[in-house]
Length: 405
Length: 105
Image (tube, rainbow over all chains, first blue to last red; front, side):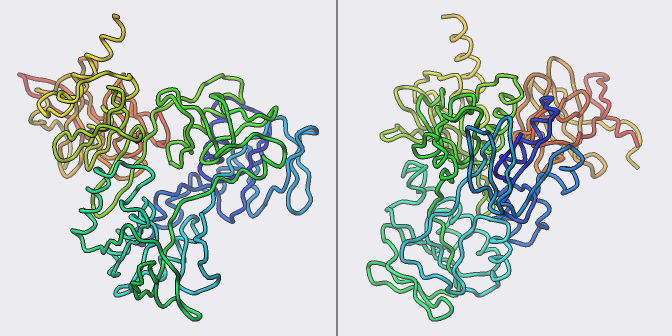
């Protein structure tokens, strides 16, 4: 058994294979020097220096050998030979597999035209990226964040806490354009503005200027923002090339079925790299989340171990910014009807069904909303908006009427 | 200190699958009613800091509000990732309509 990609998905898959009773050898390849780790802390507690890097790791290094997992870090798999069932590493080694699981994840999307090697310009994807950035986040620094997505906003939040002056530049008119309806994203914009983050939405970056080290960021409208530090967070690209070259189908991610099987025989995939059908959302998705990295990997492991387990979960995501925990379940769709349930919970309906819930310090409500989305409940908007009607009761009604048609 | 039974105000009024968090002798404790029974456990998730009493109770488990890891209410055993370490459980009793938790040390 070979797993390519020693991130959260790869690490969890190895663990789940053992838990599911897989007794054969497991070889886990990772390009980084670190053992598998989770990324949420990279933009939060690790940037703040509140925890050591080890806190992000799934298991200590010796766990892998103790569980019969050969962890090969700093090791790049260059090719798959699907007919002879082997992978070939960059240093020319050939390792055969009975089953292959690809957890190759994603890489940062480069900003077109960003100068190479200019000091003070960062991306944030890996533990090493996080450590490099943390070392430079000192009080009084002027930080320009390019990209108003979750990574950019979390970096803004952490940098503010470290005493930096922060500007966030987003080319779209609203923050989080790809994942949240504008009305809900506006709440986040207010949160950041209230804490002193300067927001520049609706204007692209023209160029990053500097000589040896970054000096400023020039926007397309001519504005020049002085900068000691720049963090670019404009999305990720799935690492599909390895499998594509071997002949696997790919369409915004590696195409897998509900059992995490790619179109290549004996080859599975899980995590950021996959494009899969979500039966609850009733469409194909590619998810870049902690939940998907973990749970799709676990599902893949069970399927590989012969315990068929379709992967079907309501997408769930969280972010911590400026002391507020933001959780999101379901997914945004164009033209959604947005209903606020009090100040802290926004709900999105499409076709009369609840399909999205976003909570600000409202974990309990979001957990119930997740069940309502799962139940594909038809609930009138006015009842959802009524804080006096408990979501728990709506759920009981929905699941009751579903079982007695 | 900490030895013996400590009253938990408000626990008697818990509905099914509801939880409250209290601090007893400087120790955070969650009291949970599930399946008609009361349970008490240390209120902090063993994975990362979050109060379990803010979590979701279902099928004899409590789910952490932060990462949806699950613990068995009866034994404290981890039931869903990312939690791998059990959470401590405490004895509970009800007397004269009041709920008490034994911190046990």
